[in-house]
Amino acid sequence: MTMVDPALRTTRTTCPYCGVGCGVLATPDVNGGAAISGDPEHPANFGRLCSKGSALGETLRTEERLLYPMIRCSKGNMERCGLERRARPCGASLPAHYRAWTARMPWRFYLSGSC
Image 1 (spheres, rainbow, N blue to C red):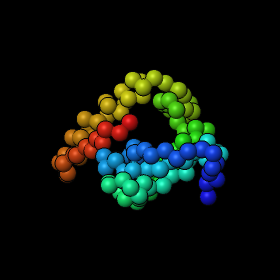
Image 2 (cartoon, rainbow, N blue to C red; image 1 turned 135 degrees about the vertical axis):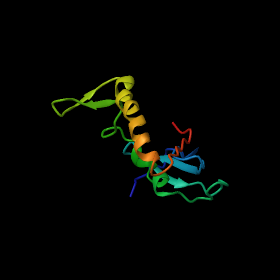
Image 3 (cartoon, one colour; image 1 turned 60 degrees about the vertical axis):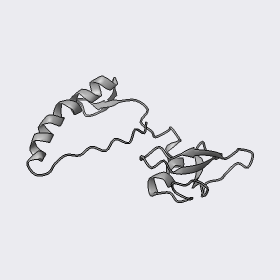
Image 4 (cartoon, rainbow, N blue to C red; image 1 turned 90 degrees about the vertical axis):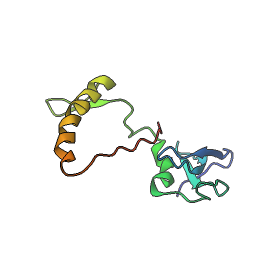
């Protein structure tokens, strides 16, 4: 159970995960996170949230979050790197994966525009 500080105000916001744009009520808690609930007045979700939206408060604390790109070195440990260096290996392998899978199934990409 999240302990909510009654002095902190609830903010109406939108869930960042998918393209639906569900309404969220976020109230900061005393642990650096937030108590999250669905906005009952929002027409997209009428107070209901999926499992990802319900867990939004858990994503706000930064102690265990990845805050910058990392790449695994030859020694096996993780090393901080630039986004371009991290994205290049992923992008280079995509055409080969695409060719291997298109014979079996068409590829579709869902881009929600959420950041």
